[in-house]
Image (cartoon, rainbow, N blue to C red; front, side, top):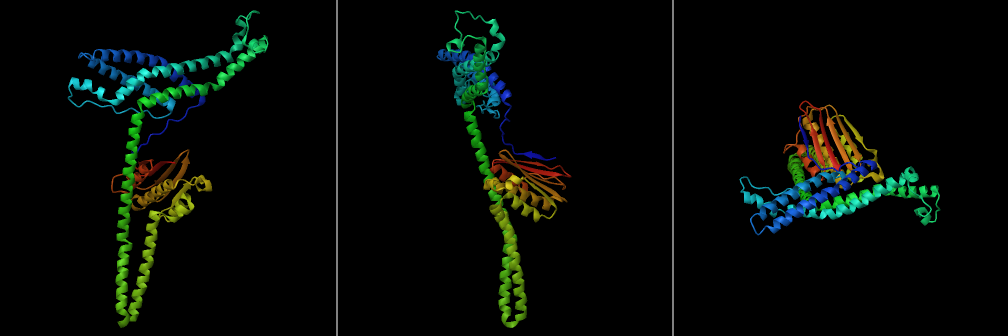
Length: 432
């Protein structure tokens, strides 16, 4: 079986409000003891390393502190996805060369900028963690104590000389007023609890993300953009080579023959008008066939129906020209006036189907084919399946390689499942 996937990170699915509340609360409340431990370890290590740097002993201490900061940062990176709903990202730290000396290994983290960012995060995080811890704890206490006040009100002392909050607000000193006021305060804390705790968790996690993964995310983004650029260039070059080959093998040859027929007809006009007429008839036939081939090639470049009427109509026309029965299922929303996709996405989706059907006709030996185009949230899923002989792959020089380049250039992912003997399924997942 061939199963190839060009992967693109996806966001972590959003949990329910209650689950997110407990995840955020656990993240914030656990953050303070972790921050306190990081602060103590790193401040002591940094102070000892800098204090002893005049001696040789200070350098290993400082290096060990940076390695400790890296380990503590990795713990924080493991906790970030639950709050930020993003995949875990770990920077690429500088690694020692094979056979590097001990001193080379000691100095290595000192020249790594990310190691110093990890150290700064481990020290400065205590301020953010303490503030968010206090706010989260106060809100949880207010929500629990207020909403359950009616359970323990009778156990509290309420003497005539003691002023209750309800009395200070002019609500009277009755039990109903007292319980009603505290319950209302508890409901306020309870209703706003998910928002406040979420804000505290995002504040702490955003600080960690900026210090611990910001540089790595930027480098990863640059890498992805470079890969998309290379894929776009490769797809364009492949399309131009194929177009040049198709023009050379088709219309160009017919035009050469047309020129020769017209030249022969001109010579025959005086000596054999009847033969000249037959030659001209052949030239007319050649002209019509050339026009038909040019129309076919133009559809491969930019089919007018795709621009004018959208992806569903273009795919319907494509399926109608198929050499085998094609079952077409397209999301009805894509055909509505307000459902048109971005032109770049429509072009990519169209060419995925067109190239896949061409591959089926040339190599698949299939008796039927299914094309499905659906929209899920902010992604377009295009699936082409057939009952052919299978064995499709993404090797260079094959049609599927061009599809992979187009999909990768659009920021999507392509998967091909094609065991020998079939069936084959080609699936493209495109971001909208």
